[in-house]
Structure formats: structure tokens, C-alpha cells
Amino acid sequence: MKQTTTEMKSDFKSKANSAGKNAKSTVENALETAPEVLATVTEFGKNVLDSMSGSKEKILQTVTTSYNSLNKTIKEKPWTFVGGAAVVGFVAGFLLGRNRSPESSIRSGIMSGVDKIKSEIEKNIDKVSERLQ
Image 1: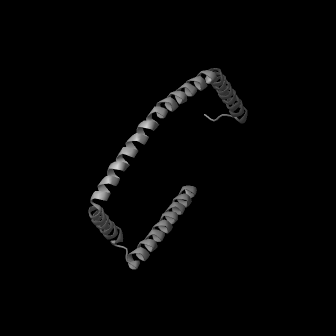
Image 2 (image 1 turned 90 degrees about the horizontal axis):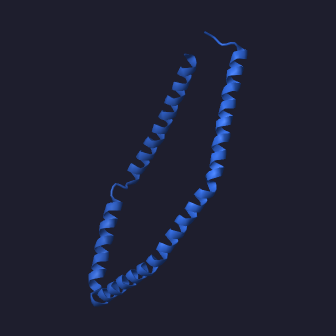
Image 3 (image 1 turned 90 degrees about the vertical axis):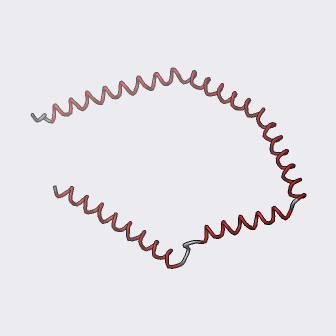
């Protein structure tokens, strides 16, 4: 059964008024609870800052101790660290340098562009099909 234009307008106004009343009620409730929420968030922030201030000294002490220990070991065995750095550099270069030929880069760039164009064409075909139905 079709609604008349007048009935549709009346139905729309009724739903809009109901939504407006619900929104007003929600905003009023939020405004009433805002001070409590603000107090809770403020207290939480203070607790986090207090716990971090104690941690700051502990972290600084741990970092300093670790640095001093590492520095002592480097001074005692410098060639071990030079060799380790060389091995790490070689492995990183090998892993990062693989499959980096110009041909593969160009090919992957072209294929990526083709895939994007194909995707756009498919989207446009879908839109046209929807409009024709």
C-alpha cells in the first residue's frame, strides 16, 4: 500500500521529532556526567604521571648500567664488535639487495598500474550495470 505525500511528510516529521528528542536527552545526560568523567580522567592521568616519575629513575639507572657494561666489553674485545658489525652489514646488504634488478622494478610498476586501471574499469562497469537495471 502506497503512502500519500502528506502521510510521508507526517511520518518523516514524527521520526525527526523523535530523533531530536533522543539526541537532546543523550546530550543532556552527557553534560550531566561530564564533570564525573573529567574528574576520573584527571585522576587517572595523575596516577600515570606519578607511576612514571618513579620509573624514570629506574630506567635511567638500567640504561646507564647497561651502557657502562657494553662500553667495558667493547674496550676489552674491540675486534669482536668490528667483526660482528661486518657480518651484520653483509647479511643485511645481501637480504635487502636481492631481487632489485631494474627490470623487475619496472615490470612490477607496470603491473601495478595495469591492476589499478583494471580495477577502475570494473568499478565503472558495475556502476553502469546498476543504472541500467
